[in-house]
Length: 243
Image 1: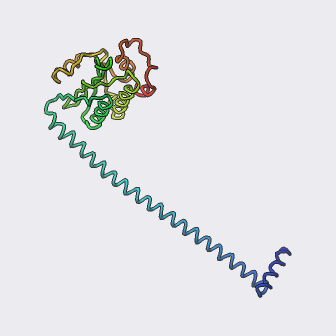
Image 2 (image 1 turned 135 degrees about the vertical axis):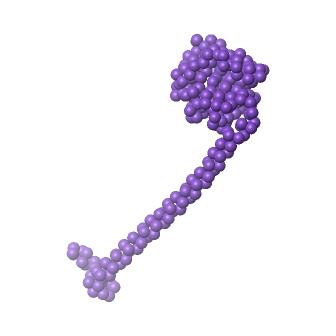
Image 3 (image 1 turned 90 degrees about the vertical axis):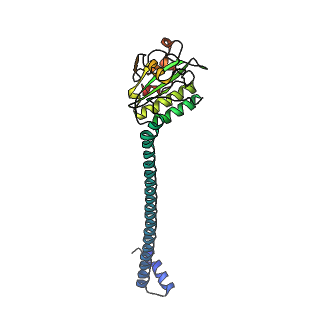
């Protein structure tokens, strides 16, 4: 034992009125007790953290269960919509979808309809003359038992905010897998909204079409008065991912 430490222990033992050995034993016992207390505190902290983690896991499990129940309810609702509500409302094979009156409203309406219409097996886009713009979009949504025509939208790509709306519609279709079966008429089409819906669809189906995939810039160019002069760089970058 170093001399300075031994001298310090002698002083402490004399001060505490006990032998050197008793002083050493007392200090060892105190050290062991302090270490045990530290371990106990650490264990308590770990137990509290473990309990908190278990509580959090249980809470997440409850949230997941609740979400699964809600999704199950939505699935049943959408199934009923497609198998019962739509057939009941659309007794004719062809149905015209009314315009929302605004470009963003038409976009939201089409996106909502596409997400809820599970029977969709194909989609065809047409470009016609617009009213407030040079061009406007017509959409024919095809199903095994029903067709839905939106030929009164004012959607266009002639300005950036309007282009974004058309892009969002196409992104929605891409997520649904419908862009892989989407086509577009290679020339501008006549206005059809004043025709009976059956006649309008017959008219539109006379036009030559091609797939949207790999030809998306050709489709976009049809919105402009001189399609041959339209450059892909005019459009936002996100179109490349859909092409």
